[in-house]
Length: 226
Image (cartoon, rainbow, N blue to C red; front, side):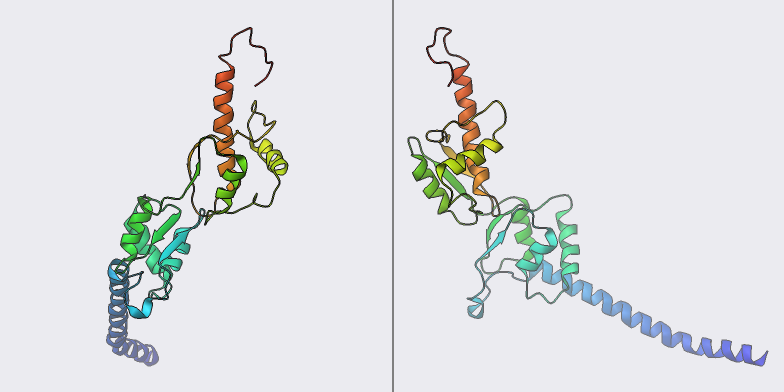
């Protein structure tokens, strides 16, 4: 009986100390959260001084990158754990999603502002342009010089390219040849896309136009196929 009373008295004596420890831990945790949010809200992810000249001047976000991966790329020197930056980013974006692209990192740019730009798709505009009257060789050469693309077809012959594009063309479109089969226009792309995707878009648009014109031919038209 005396042992039970003694144990309860000792526990009561330790209660204030436990409460003090818990209180200090709570204050510490709240301080960490506050500092982490301030870093997310105000700290620069771009060039902030002469010592940062070696930092990349742009952030390349490839298609398929997740928010956590983008945050780690944008702020590799952040003292906050990436999970906290992800938490603040998720709260800030709400239902918005970030877009793949190339985003300049100028001096003073915060992670919060960078995410706003990504959600609004305000990165560099990346385009491949097919000009009217341009040859297939010229179009392919221009395509192979573009940065940020996956150049799958650069080393292929025209016939190899035609075969691959045939596999991607929906029925009833067929490609008997490629010369003149790229619709002249500007084709936007994002980092991580394949050059085949752009070539397929251009071929499909030209084939669709050709089919539409072919469908309006006179009944006595001498050719049997486009």
